[in-house]
Amino acid sequence: MKIDAISDVRKIAQAIFNKEFSWFVQSDPLVVDVAGSHARIFYVCTRASCGSDENTSVDCRIHFDANKMWISSLHVASLFRLQGLGRQLVQTAEATARALGVETVEIYPFPSSQNFWRKLGYRQNPRMARVMGKHLRSLASEQKVDSIRYEMAWST
Image 1 (tube, rainbow, N blue to C red):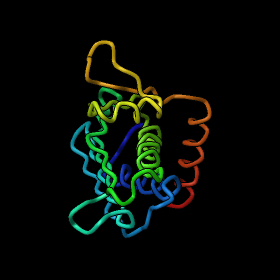
Image 2 (cartoon, helix red, strand yellow; image 1 turned 135 degrees about the vertical axis):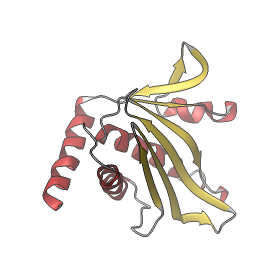
Image 3 (spheres, rainbow, N blue to C red; image 1 turned 180 degrees about the vertical axis):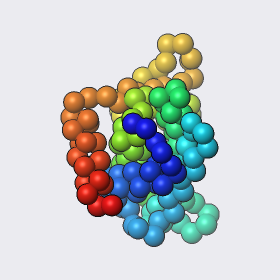
Image 4 (spheres, one colour; image 1 turned 120 degrees about the vertical axis):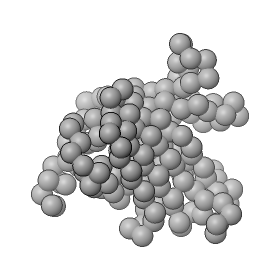
């Protein structure tokens, strides 16, 4: 997919978060920055955050030239853990990456979180010991992404 402007990335991210993340609220901070062939998507879930002390958030960096997204950080406020929010945030970030044409997601997980990432289908990168990754392409996901793109085309 050719990304023409920051507004394209913002519209896609907004549409995916609205459709995929059940805790999403339109007023939640969803920051999108694009510079050259890179983009940053940072989202804070206000309904699952504890004031300014502890936010539930996901921060992703997309490298269009490498066809890869890095999840820089994922945090779920302690009061909201073990409710599936982390899984939902990761799946929403993955859906956003798919909609933007990205095929791979990688992370540098804390050793204590590796089991969480394995449950979501992430595997050790054989070339980089600390990196875990996941390939996103599948027929079902392509159809879902095409559906979202179609809806967006008619809503503009």
